[in-house]
Image (cartoon, rainbow, N blue to C red; front, side, top):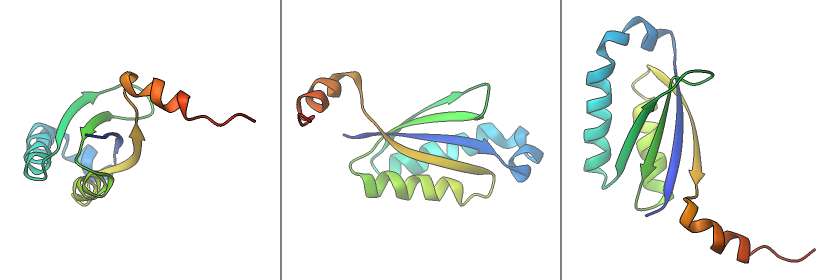
Length: 98
């Protein structure tokens, strides 16, 4: 399955309800599983509050999951395709010569 990365920042509503974060993570995980996705959450320091690694059947499903989580109104999300180390060789082989 392709891998994606969602970078979250808590907005004002998310910050005001931060004690509900464990429940929100559980709800998002259940939503992901219902969409045949696997997720790993990392809470991070710095520019973002969390990074979520998503394995999804396809880009559309992954984006729908990201939109569903964002629609909670507690986070903003940057969403992108991520390539695992095992995929790097194939990517490099496909680089055209200048």
